[in-house]
Figure 1 (cartoon, rainbow, N blue to C red):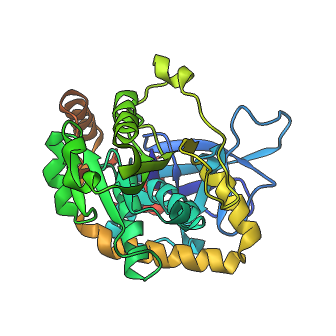
Figure 2: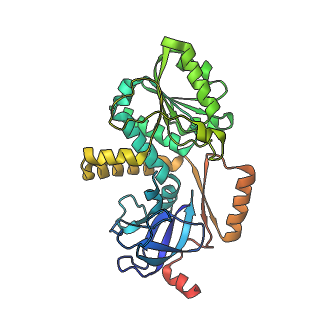
Length: 352
């Protein structure tokens, strides 16, 4: 789970005890992790995984994981050092929002940047976003809205969110979509009847829904054209399902050009980010990210109700309820196996 921790014991000379860190941790009070000795810098260090070559020299640190919750492998292996992290917000709300949004937001951020680099596939008139109540989806809609507000995208561009009936009201209240439609009746929407060129952002990864969308655009013909489908997430697809091995992906272009025909493109953030690093100065990339993150911290605080749960038994009970009843998109759970908030390193040492 994504969360924050405090280093209470370190055998690495460049990693200090008492540091606050953020990363992908196991849900536990204490965690012993190896550190790649050669892969430590002022902003982060990296934890090796079994797929890496053998024979590495490792040192260890002991981290007390205090508060935690809800691509490439490297971001999962990266432990960020809060004191040098430009996006770190030390308030309880700032940390909670970081745990809830950070990986999802940057996926949405760079995907929108990639699409914008092709002038939104040579200027589409509308964007469909599935799983519109999910954080990746509505962060993408938030970024498109910022693009329109800044005058960098045609103000007539419409963003339509597709979601289940039970999530309609929440998704509408976000105020991030021009229109929110349910999966069962969206094809009858007047917005889609007006025609134009459309982009489909597939966050749900639902094969039946995708067939419906493709069939609809094939039927309406010249009145509306589906320019391309961008796969961003596949939240409805389990690895063991038949569809996981049968989806036929077309090649994805990361050169900024628009595709020549309607197809499925799979967005992969690390590949696009590597290209951006060659196109833009690192300082410009940092500036863009900093502005976007600050806007998220300001605008996003009202989107989801954050709830903190403390103590092992309370976390266990909450988890069992979540497994049984699910969790609505309007709630974000922040869990700690500790009974108090932000236990200090000194306090931890007295308990060992």
